[in-house]
Image 1 (tube, one colour):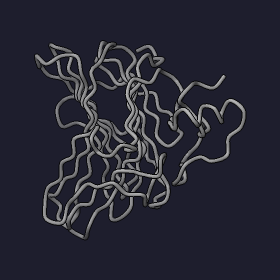
Image 2 (image 1 turned 30 degrees about the vertical axis):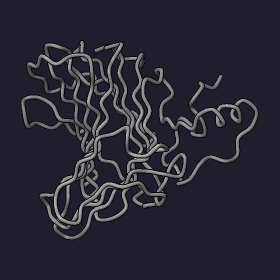
Image 3 (image 1 turned 120 degrees about the horizontal axis):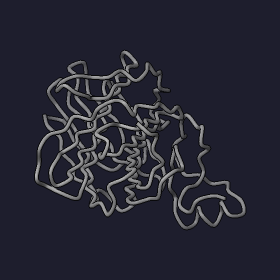
Length: 250
């Protein structure tokens, strides 16, 4: 049986064309009318959703450097025909960030999923989840390089990276890719990583952590570094936070 709020995407889909899903039948039609939500993996229950249908008010946006901005666009676009476009001026020190903070009623089986599209001169894209428990800050970080295809996780000791796989994305501004990270801070480790329809078990990879007194929420971030070769552009089409994810045992 289909889950409410999940529509239009096969579990093994690699990319999603821009625009809204239009042809649905039976139960799918009802779901499509109620909520346009894309999910690469249909486990967990939806805790938070950002799809930019009501603008940028749900997120915090930050850019640096001349010629840099974050604005709504319909090219490329995902659900509801809109996404948030990061544009960075031609400099390697420029950075763009879209952040969503979420209060957590549960601390087990957390998932964060980003749908993104590269538009121009993109090198790295970064997916970050900062989780504050009241005693610790866990800093989960996924990085993907378009130049090398390297998919990596930040790990311990500080400054170390674990290479998950080498992946070739379909790099086209009209198509969206996806990244979903599942983790359980009680183990101190990542758990699963889904990237464009492929799944990776990463439950032995430690999440960088340190003492911090803030409690009960996460910061989800999509960040983009600039390049000196030209203007960099990438879009975030949708962000989902889930809880109650099925976890692989460490």
